[in-house]
Length: 259
Image (spheres, rainbow, N blue to C red):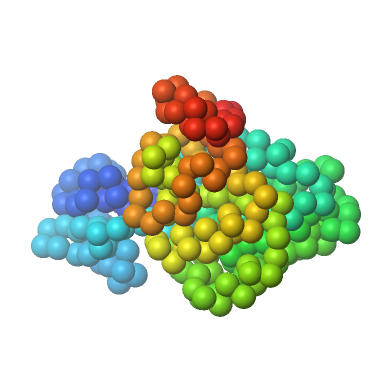
């Protein structure tokens, strides 16, 4: 197992359990205790966990796994969701994309859509995600608008008041939200309040709002609300979504697309 694969697995186990012992982690990953100690020490240096005697605990009370370690989680579901979201967007529209692994896949699905290979522009994409802007900027048929702000290393998203000036002057046809939780009662949410605030502004500037979320995000709550459920027009999720949860969203007036 490569170092990156070990680190991703260790961080996912920490998110799930809250703490890990060295011997426990070594047994789960089938590596030596010395290797796990080095991994824990190096991850602690990056402030991605807190070392304890004999193990490690998650970093802070609202721990969030950094984006670069989330890309492989539920990858096939996210790619199916992304393709379905991309099909909801029409040539010539102005589209807002928040950060996240699923919205990054949406950007990639848009980049290979045959009817978006030309135009002036074929699509206008407004995003606060540096990685999404980087991937689409090489596509000359896309007009890319970046919000500005201060980069958040966990998600590559730009946050803070500098983004308000840009978002206050534009209008979007669609805002596509990546979320960590979406619940009928509590709405769409993120881990970080500054990130949620920028995403909320994107929603307010859009004619319609699409939430792109795999089934593990549904029926959950998170710290910072982006918007109430009634402001969401469409939810695109995977076929593993709980039927009762889907029914509640539909009763709330949300169109649910499962893939």
